[in-house]
Image (cartoon, rainbow, N blue to C red; front, side, top):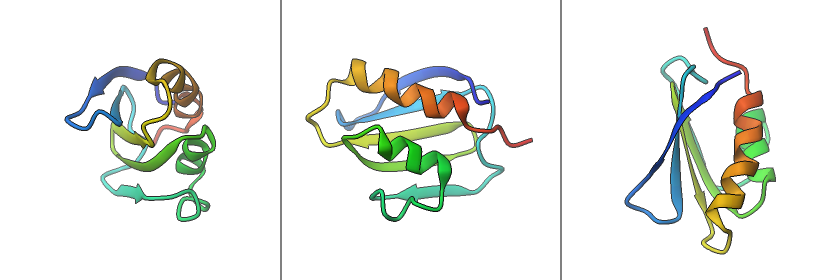
Amino acid sequence: MPKILDIEYTPNPNARKFVLKEPVTSGTSRSYTNADLAMADPLASALFDVGNITSVFYMDRFITVNQDGSADWDELLRKLAVPIREAPAVT
């Protein structure tokens, strides 16, 4: 289970970067611009299922999510933390 080490702001106010203690991939990146493209990826799909998410990018020890601008980040971050913590770490 990847544990969240930090959550960072990005230059984009609609994006946040989760820095993880454990990797979720081993060097490969994954990028999805909508929920339909992420259907075969359990982690990305779970992040889109939170709602208001417009894109997901992740590799190694970080995950960046973008929202549509209508959600409150404090509430959204709490919801996003659940699937991130439940995701299997890659060893």
